Length: 452
Image (tube, rainbow, N blue to C red):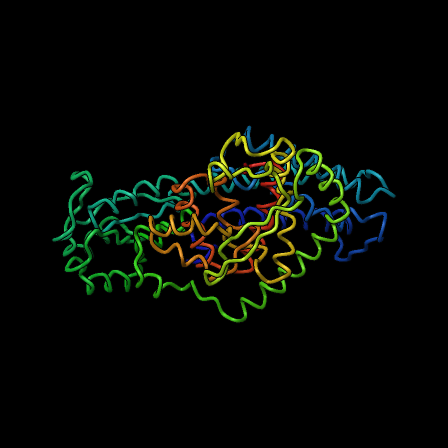
């Protein structure tokens, strides 16, 4: 399932951003051409015009304008106003030789009005019955119940029409919602104008009338299984509901040489750039680490990497000396007494992880990927859940899909939840997802979410 599938987490954001992009281009076209088909741009005095659209979209993105789930006009207006204020300051800064011009101010005000109108129109049209997809679920067990739960959390518009019973599946759903038996699925699909049939069976053997499902597909009904629906809507994979054959038949989980080469180029370029930017501040970090507590500057620790090979990870030390001597290895937690005052500050801004850029340049890590776990925890988690070792098919990362989608893990349950996101990342590995994770990481750092 792709990251831009209907109902996916990213699809809505991309549509809204595309609309804003067209609005921005249209405004700049009108301002600079006065309606005539020509475009002129002075390198300095009109630099704001060149940056107008990307700055406004980035500010809107970081102000969470594209993540509003329901069309609350007050929330939308406040976020848009904040984004426009930030954009105005940035555009002034970028074009300081010209200052604020009438065209710039007018352009921002016009963009604000169009953005609120476009966002409101999108949300309202999205609520119309035209976009609602009628869902029919084959199955009446626990998996079928989970389908109803995730449909309620979806950003897409789904209407669960009911369940289809099968000879072997247990009945855990409300019996009033069972529309009929699988033998009548073609007639029931036509009667309820079904868009998608979801296969959510506890027991598949002898339960599926394949010929009838083929007939449903040939009349335009989409057939998906529960793990694929779950993946599309939540951005993670239900490890407890998949099997090896699902992994084999999935369109993803294919790490080609081309993908590896592109990721390596991306890693080297981004890590080198960040090192050049941050290295002048390293002496300040070193001084604060030594000032807070005696001991080494760097904290070296064994982690499990690609193909289950151990490597040494580098971090600025954020804990006191011998923090784990008495209690042994343990996950970080809220108000962890082992973390120094300055160490807590470093963790919130991810400063302690900057030395891992060296791990990336050495080829032990990637900039984006599943977080490398300690060997002690890997054995514990892999015993508790299937498919944990599959996350080591790619290099571990400084940041990743699980890190931007879920808070810092401090328990076995958190690690299993993060595994669901890690498998989604591996299954949907692409340049688009990589870039999204980079931007989401910046957002996480700016708003200090999910660190301990």
